[in-house]
Length: 465
Image 1 (cartoon, helix red, strand yellow):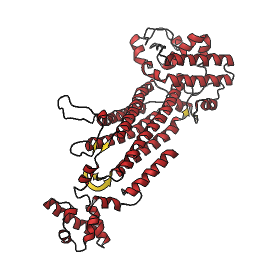
Image 2 (image 1 turned 90 degrees about the vertical axis):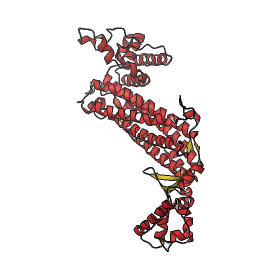
Image 3 (image 1 turned 180 degrees about the horizontal axis):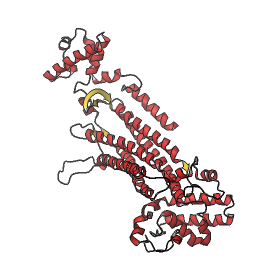
Image 4 (image 1 turned 180 degrees about the vertical axis):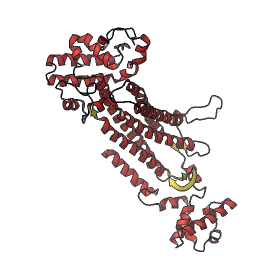
């Protein structure tokens, strides 16, 4: 990347002294915003096409500009383009290259626009495309979860509250909770995309332009839903980036929670699942170790994404209208959020596809911790006992089980009847994990028949989306 001093700055006419060398490097953004080149060129082609249609450029000038921009894009993609720090950003690098290639006609490209509306357009084009990619990646992860849920639809495990054994559920049911969280994430991003899909180009610096431009036509060429209604707002707000970052933070929060469960479940103390060796590392000193590094890193990256959201909110909170140079600082956190979000989704999808489960260990743990205590209370309610009285009776039975080191299903009928004469032989049908799970046979419940139905509905929702 070239950082030699230059006098080719587009705004140099008003200035009498060259920019300080350190200031030049400090203020340049081309080191990171060059990744917007594809969208910058796409926007410029649309802008030139509109200018020609409105008679602001000739057809020949348009063709020269468009052909020149296409050649520059090809050079960039072939690795033969040299980015210049003195030219500050991706926009001026491309415009300067165009002018070198096609002559003074290249200087006409910027008619009727500013870098203010240009960069806002570039970022919206970039983010719109990335949201589409991220939603596809979420769908891939959801697909992997559905596959696993279908295989484990009858695998009984303990459900937890406060990380204490609460009630038996199935592993398939637990996985479908993950699916629902991700579905809301996909919907959030689709909703966010609607507010990204607005064209700033034509707002110029802040007040619009005196040229007879057609912003609706430019929006049509770039596939935007419509042009921005207010030129000040179009160039100065980055709430669409903040909104995306908030949606990304929620998604990473979900992935972090999933990671935490995988870390717990893969430990020797739980032993519910085993992560593939491909997603773990060992210890430099303890040869027996198999560390769940991938979910730990995803859990850690969530904090990084949260930090970007707070940084962007802080960036915007004190800015008066319209554009301020502060907004140059929006891109690095945005790019980092996108990169880490896509990476986390990809590795999580691959990891879930290779996950191995231990249904026997899950079932054995579900028989501990008096997981069917609520089922016993419900049994007594069906016998006509008020729930609060049934709750107290079961509490006494649990206390006995604790003293004797036995689960409720291991206590004899005689021992159980000392707490209520309404308890009969049929009680043991509800004291097993399978009986408990099967009894919750309603939409949203953990009964295997309901989980299968939920999986089928989920597949239909993904097709319809």
